[in-house]
Length: 577
Image (cartoon, rainbow, N blue to C red; front, side, top):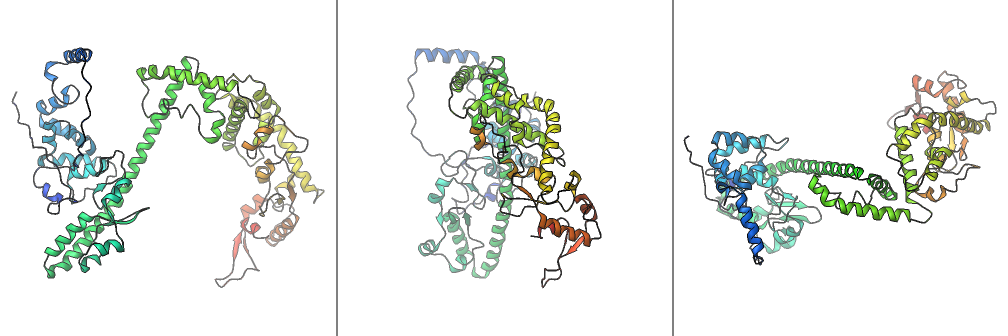
């Protein structure tokens, strides 16, 4: 087998254009590729702990496990080293085309041989293909080569202080800078700066070419190094050529700003995608932990905590626990490491829960909450053109109230308990509730029209109003059954003393009542006149009939310089009063 000579280059420190006024990134594209690598801050080496005989024994044991051909090489067992030395170049190039530019950067730092391959001019195609494989990634700008562009996009640390997790990119300056370093690195571009730093008038009057960006909470900042470089370049250009030079700089800055906006959108989507990915991992970990707890009999207690009183605040002790809320897949080893701590936590929570005293019991609240959530889910899937019971009618029903209060507090009812009970009993509850409440609303209408029947509730002239509302809300059948004020009053003869301590945390959690509802006789008469003017009979025309006819109605009292005013049903009803 023929051997090949690895392409190597000496590792170089790239000096960004912000620090070197006489070198541009384009210069590096003529030879080997370079990358941005900020100078590392010198740090005092930490004192090393003296080795003991025990550690020496462990070290010798570990060395004995590593094959001789893999010793003294970098990387896990030196596999990347062997990859760069033994594998044919065409195979390496094919593999590298399927990784993202950020991974290529990491590979280039893993060994000198891989760096020699990836930083050579002949590898530029690999970087380009890898970049083009990234979805929606903006094209590479002309002033950066491939590694430099990858460094700016994928290396999430501050280029000034090396702080990790810095997602603030100054695209015009081609660098990342954390909030702590902005003031120490850049100057505020204001009158004081212009007074202290004398610049050519022709240059300072052209804000469209200056290295100035606006930072929220800071204002406009200027890069002193880039400004000095711009001044030097301006002064070396003949006077006759300055006009063309200024035009080129204006176009260059506009191009960078436009490209930076596109890059910022890509970066924000990338970060949002990463956040969603981590959230999914946390959810999977939480579910895996619950399954493990189920095997040892602690899942029910965890579910009680998840659905406990703190759900009102969208927080709970279990989900927020440091051992649960990790973006890390749960392994067998990981589970064995956290099992004892979680069991102790759950045991303490159970003891605290059973000893809880006061008007609001967390277990009772949790059961009310679960019942409300399950019923709201059913409502969202139902046809509401016919009246449905309010949440308060369900949670105050004797059947569900007894289930909530009579079941022992240390017994977990399960995730689907109330949904199954609702599926079983809700049809009969509706059959009992609906006729009674329709009759209650009909009695309200009969105070103005004694001969009214149930069918009259559907008439287009049947309007109701709420005495508890300041605004003139248009209420009709069946909308009146979903009006919030009707679910906030205690019905006559209905008082559940056990539920009273929980009323404040269940807005609109009372049974439906028509106590605040009256018939709107004035609006009924005006709407009847409108219906009659449309050649329809107001005593038989329903709301659905008016929707189907959809008459075009002109308001004779509305005058405007723009012309006449027309409207349709039911919008005209909102303009009557």
